[in-house]
Structure formats: C-alpha cells, structure tokens
Image (cartoon, rainbow, N blue to C red):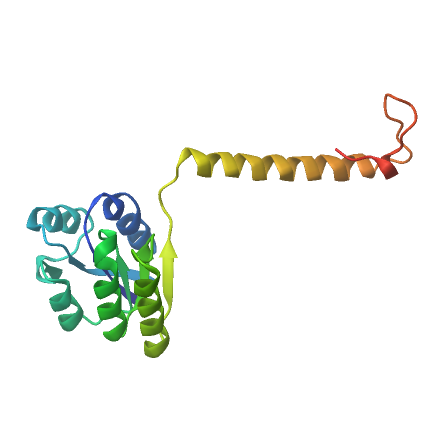
Length: 172
C-alpha cells in the first residue's frame, strides 16, 4: 500500500486531493498532513481519518518523521519550490497543483531535484475555467463531427440534397 502525505490543507485538498487519495481503499493510505493552520489540520484530519499524531504544522517535520511514497503539494505557488524539493529529497514522488512554480528558474530547480532523486514529479490541474469548458465542448463537437462523417462515409453512394455529391467527396 502506498503511503501518501499532503502539504497544505486548503480548499483544493478538501475538495479534490484528500477525497481522491482516500478513494483508493486498499491501495493508498492518506498517512500524514501538514499545514500551518491547526484548525485546517483538524478539519481535514478528522474528515479523512488522519490520526492527530500524523498531523504537522511544519512540513519538514512531516517529511522527516513519516515514510511517505508520495506527497501532494497543495500550497500557494511561491511555496512550491522548497516544499517539492524537500519532499523529493525525502524520497517521495511529488504531485503539485499548477503552476509548478512562479518562475522558469524555480521550475527548472524542481525538475532537476526530481531527476536527481529518481522520483516522479507531476503537475495537476484540478480547477476549470469557462475557457477550459469551451475547449472541452469544441473537442467533443469535433469528435461528434468525425463520428458523423464516418457514418455518412459508410453509406454506399449516398446522394446529398444537391444531387451532385457522393459520400466519397463529402466533408462536414
């Protein structure tokens, strides 16, 4: 079973990361939490059955005291670099909320740390905007159009309303 820890117990942890990790019953254990807010630690820890002994107000203490296979970094962007690098150096794979860092140089340092540690680094995008939804709709529309085109092309010598085009030269 994989042992997971989360650094940062804000809304994205409550709505996405903790529920997903705890849904893998028998495969993943949400073993430890770190946050600067004791109230958030208590809320998330109680809600997802993380023992008070495995809740930390200092992420470095969590990484030192817990044997974690993976760590989710769910903190403000400017904290990603030190937290991700510390988790990688502690021997954990890391999943971070986007963006990876606030500068390209910071991102490069995190990637180098993952390479050096031989660990996986993944960036997650869990929040969707109207633009994201519109892109999804366009992709689905394109899939529908392609599917419709394939269906039309399967018809033998189907005549279109103009009477001068067959399925072989049709496009949607």
